[in-house]
Image (tube, rainbow, N blue to C red):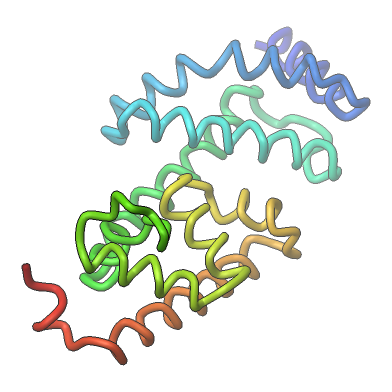
Length: 193
């Protein structure tokens, strides 16, 4: 066990010194195992588990390069899985608490306003609403709901100070979108088919 921790610490030191091949080696060594673990433990589908693992590796890399992780107190695999578990649990919890407005908007959100193939008025309406909320809201909501980015990954992509800033901004964006939706239509006349 001590030998494994020594090897793992070597990976940490190599990443800290800028060796990107070590990140690739960690990714390849643990990807399949993490996906199988996430599927059996949390019943996550393969694409979700793969996305979560990628976010976990990015977070691991960030923690090492910014000095948050200097010395391992567990195996690298345990540390990486703990990050992945936290990301996955947050993602699954988020998905289970979506309210009616969010579910409805998500189903109809990702249609460009000028898309000739938009098949119904609701899709065109929500696409137009997305255009009215502008940036950064449009990008944040697309990254979160359609690309499956974690809030930490969005914070990095949008160059926010931290994950909490990204969460606050996403909540403001979603509230704005809901308010615009409710101002246009009542739930009964627009949610029904």
